[in-house]
Image (cartoon, rainbow, N blue to C red; front, top):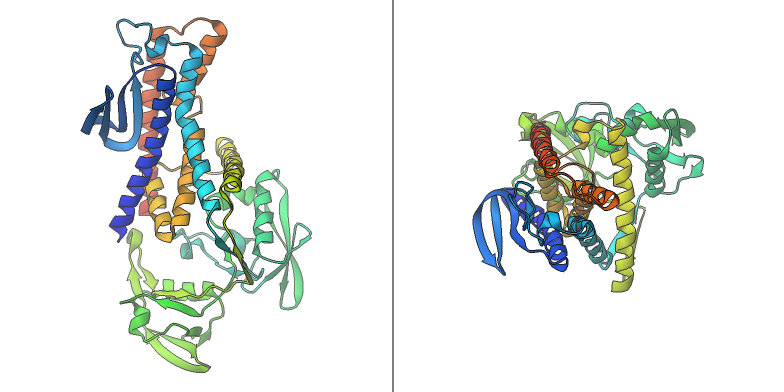
Length: 450
């Protein structure tokens, strides 16, 4: 089954590349220049077909693509009037912008499609289940942001930034404000614990942790079993849907974080579970299976717990015209968030190694989104498409942004950039691209291994 989702991830990446290059191709056609090669992937074509005088191909290295126009290479001995480098700068800008523009509008369309779908809006009581270590969430053995800030299991969050909290959305809204805070400032919380109200806070400096990891608490705590995986340790122990776990090895277990810790830390170790079944307490011995991802043994029971929302609301899908408006609105929100994160990355507020990913990590995240739901997959595709929109407009040699900058320079000075300079820019860009590609790929592999 995992192979199927990896294939889906591969196809999704191909679609996003196709959309980008199609933007260049159509912009070029509108500007009156002939495309010579349309390639999904780099390198020699393993499959190719000539249509309308254009060679369409699949390159052997799949992570990328290009649309090559006539006279685009500054190494050409002679340039004809209708060659790319001889075109009016405005036309070159239009062609270079075509690819990113298609990525942007593709994201808008995806988000508009999602807006037409009905969904169930869930809100949860502001009672937290807190994980002490990230190893139970992301496999990295570090204290979670929530635990280090002082949150504990069963805390009821009653205020955030001085405002009353009624559900989980109020809490997440407060956390989002960390992005706009200056160093030294913090988001304040009031929690109710054992009948007393306590002040807690999360500092702006801790945002770097929040950008690359979840906060470390969950809402909607439940230990009532919804589903049991076939062939799992839970099935072998005789657990059933509807059972509620109330103790592990005689120790009362009220929170999901406690359950996960006990199972995670004891792969292959016999344990006694006390469950509530139809109002009666029964005991079942269970031996958690082993999950060996990354070469680390983790306990695995094979159960899915029921959701425990405070309220559920059925929200109908929007009509097409309103869905399109929602697509533009949501894409703007996503772009703002991404640009904020990019700014913090450049200024060193968040670590590069935890925040930068290449094609391998994107494919890993895509297959995880595909496993979750079609909605999750389409939403993730929209996010990646918007990232491609931004990244290709950066003034980095060899990407679209550099062509736009060079063309703007020629438009202002009314002089073409020297071809030898163009060659040096392209060579520098190629070396930079290969170097960054190798570093990001290494980072991706290390991330997966961890």
